[in-house]
Length: 190
Image (cartoon, rainbow, N blue to C red):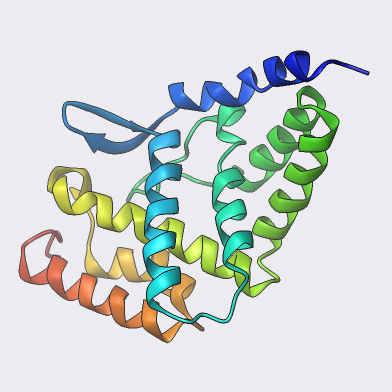
């Protein structure tokens, strides 16, 4: 049996997520996936204490912690007009399987369970975690209008609106967000 220290050392592959950058800006650089995960967790904490979604709060947080680990191997695939995302799911599934082989057994088992739950979207917790991580990117971009160059209200709605279905509080927040973006010139008019 490997020592705890050896197993902790194996976590360094996950720490590589700090070096994976997303399309989103942070000051004069790009946001790392770890920063997105952190802000998604903060947003989840806020929302889970404000609204009663009828979910296991700890499970939502766990799903958010692990939801983007595959990006260690495949990088981020940005949601942006004109970016081809075909094959994203297959690439990420293959990366998830590859990630399992390098993690300590205890963590690999937990990661597999959480990854499958998040991807299947069969539980209320998984659907809420997905909605929160999608909304996090929207909140982030309020400070980086240039990142939304080429976005239209239609593109945003077609890309993200369905994630909030079943959560009336989030549907209302999304509508308020869309209105704010429209009124403040974030959308490209077509």
